[in-house]
Image (cartoon, rainbow, N blue to C red; front, side, top):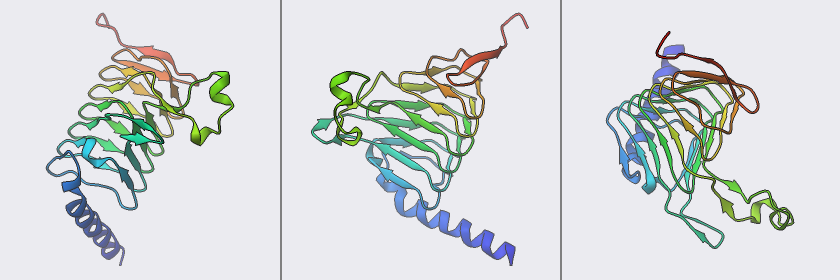
Length: 193
């Protein structure tokens, strides 16, 4: 009986992917969308080959919000595994390299509702204009732990490890491990090691 439910779920994933793939800017071979996930702005989203987006995820590329207009871009490379309940949202640019693995409930965002100024704080949060400090770039072979948050304007170097529950607010050098709120380097491999 367990096998039946497994194959039924796999069939649902294949059907969902077949129905939705044409809506994306690019959708690679052997890639799959998770069940019960939500998408907005698929025409701005590029998904490479052999990548999987976990179930119950949210993937949004906002071209308009209230009276604002944007040209968003989300790129997910080849052989990526984005965990369940991920939230990836862009008004500007999010680039995820090849072979990136994330845990569940990961947030990757290049925007926020307003900036931290008095005039913005006097507006209801859902009415504040969307604001971006800059693009998010995640290079190849990065591992992002469960419930980590990657904030706007961050560049994560090749081979980096982001510990679970970390909030990444600054760039992460290649081959580094970061942890904490805000995330700090706890280990780094240099060329001499």
